[in-house]
Length: 387
Image 1 (cartoon, rainbow, N blue to C red):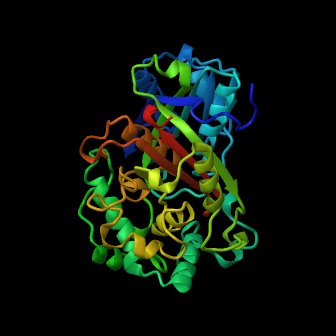
Image 2 (cartoon, rainbow, N blue to C red):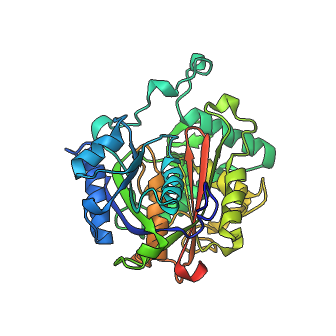
């Protein structure tokens, strides 16, 4: 039996996926939303709680969430993990779950997240642990100021423009307009983005992610067992992560993220390259994220991201489908968005995305980012045709 990441390509598959409470869900705690999404994912897969023996996830307000969620659902897991590395957590947990499945530690995994950030706080809720003793003296608007620094540096280094940043927000909104579950679906233009309220130069409010409630859940099992489930299996072909810093002041280069390392390793494991990808789901907490990740993951050269997203290239009418659910900018962003990249990727490959469905999609790249461009994790998913 292999250990670590050896041999996990195609060893595990997603057989259930669901969301709950996207937008506003007053009256529910984050844990309750996660439970609701988990029950829906189990129903999607056609299994019961007693069939699950691995539990992986995170909640913003519960440090022992693996124990709490298992208790609520009546699961007695052989293995659980709720290690939090920010918004990339869930793409890291799929990697861990696949290793546990491959090595015979568990058979079926639940991966979950839930947050009532909008209903509970009405705004972005920031823990004091995020504030650095060194950066806090300057009273930054966390996390907006950190991402704004990266955007400003990219503009300085490569001539990226405010209009190009706005293109990202407009493309996300156009995808959201095709998604009935998306929180913001009103028309949005480049002029609207640039004229909206400034949050942290060069960002306006439309360059920044939503503050919503929401939950998501996924069911993973072995490739052998996956064929017996009601849903079309979506296989984890490649997974890799890396992190270089926590605070933005420790980031080696504001224009290069650790996705430049996680992406190539995930592609190598999958035996694929960027040109093989049919649909891309990126953690777009801010408009600069999409530009940086498209560069670092190999879809365009470093410094070309602004020009790459111009003229609607990543919008529904463009050549490259990016953030087809509307992303964190227009669909949902309940504190940590990463699990929603996976859910959209899985559902695209299952052909379940109706008006925004990418025709004949076989390969999806899902990428999560945590902190302030801190932790980067890349997952590459595929249908049986690309195993």
